Length: 123
Image (cartoon, rainbow, N blue to C red):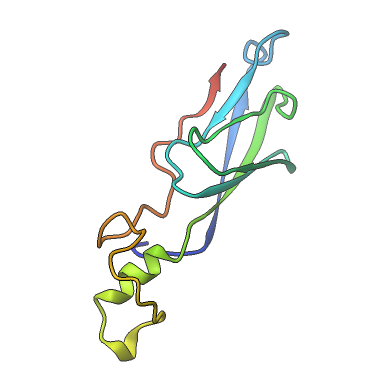
């Protein structure tokens, strides 16, 4: 959704193999290019917040062999909403910030979804 600002939750079930979970191996969840913040959960266990690149969480301890449920909440800033409002008439705007051109990375805003998540990968 263009100009989305807020939090979106993504979930995906992945299968962890016994080889991936072998002793001495680490397993990582790579979310790709998130832009702002992502809270990571695996099988319901909160693994914390990723707030800067690389958006990669070590999931070795939380991963189980077989179907594994992953979810992540991605939160971005008001910059997208402000960029969207700049192209609307005053009476249709949601925001009234006077920060034209600041902090948005251009007039089109920033991606609101993770770009090219790789999900599971060995360390």
